[in-house]
Length: 168
Length: 101
Image (cartoon, rainbow over all chains, first blue to last red; front, side, top):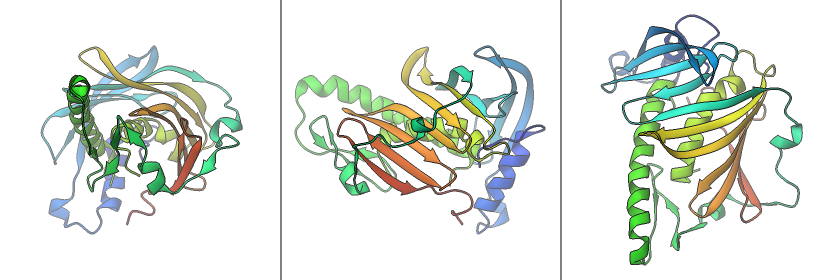
């Protein structure tokens, strides 16, 4: 669903997916993106096509690079962050790499979510943000503040990415 | 699935490479690389990513003090989170455009 297509304007594909995902939404309220070609470029030494992407849901422009050989997005940059695929190496990947290691026990999702995080029980909220409870030592304050800033940045990037790639 | 911070990384990583998983040439591409997220020239986090046709593996996703590997398989439409620290894993259905409606 995130594949921009092998050629042409990637927003044609993304908007098609978007329409399918938002079929129950009134046409006037359906999100859409617009792509403007920004020419040829390189990402980590690989030829790529650069696009400037805007959304009718939020202001600003996000730059997206699409690898010419693989046809996948290899770089996304907005005003805050950059996500880039580096050191790409094409070649055979062993099947075992995509299997669960032997000896690992299967757990239900709730058990996994109960994993401890810095002494605080990890829980999930409706918007996917992890929250903790319990005591926090002063020496952890800096870490927690940095983590909070990172979470905010993560949220912003994920939101931006969702708009671009139409994650429901 | 809501391991928020690391999951956001998984989400964005997945979005970049899912084209090869769900795209037109699914099954034809095999590659690997490093997914780096940065701000102000400072690396925020990174993961090793492997793609084989309809399968995607994202390694070393930090979730607090726990390390996760993630497997996405568009063939059986599954999402597997592997808790490397505690040697356990969980499998969830992979929601897609075909199932989100």
